[in-house]
Image 1 (tube, one colour):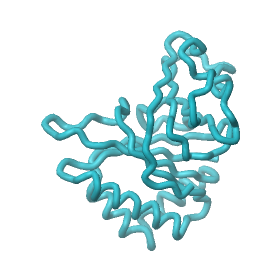
Image 2: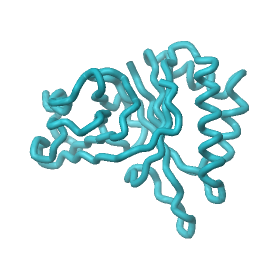
Image 3: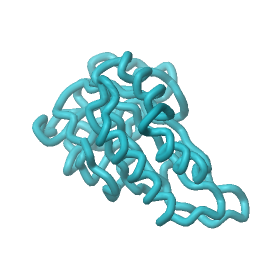
Image 4: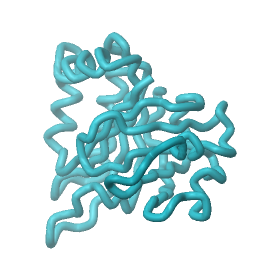
Length: 198
């Protein structure tokens, strides 16, 4: 199981309500006519993501968003890319794209747990460049309930996003500061669901 994660915010002058309605319309379109290999999506409102470019000087601080697209495999990523701007989805996609301001993305693979995106908290874990990963990554999920939580690892470097992601109702012991090696960092964010078709 793969997840394409996309963080974004509206362009200057676009209100949050209009932007959110455009997002929901696009995700609803995908749910109504899912591309091959697409397993659902979810959209969350989040704040404080350090890897999403800040608002331009003088621009009011806009809300940020986190989209998750669940995919069967790498082929499904290509299919989604084509389908998003293809017949049946182009109108909702273009309406959203006209309101888009800044974004960053990442492709993540499921390491363990159940791909349930409906968690209010997300923990992003990064490690210093060149540090040894070893078996430690597998310990990040220590204490999580695999029926209601999941551990993901970045597959490609598509942007500055962290290497690991843990979705869980509460942060498990494996991502506690006392458990992480020197230089590793875990950032926890609360998020508000706007769409949950996954």
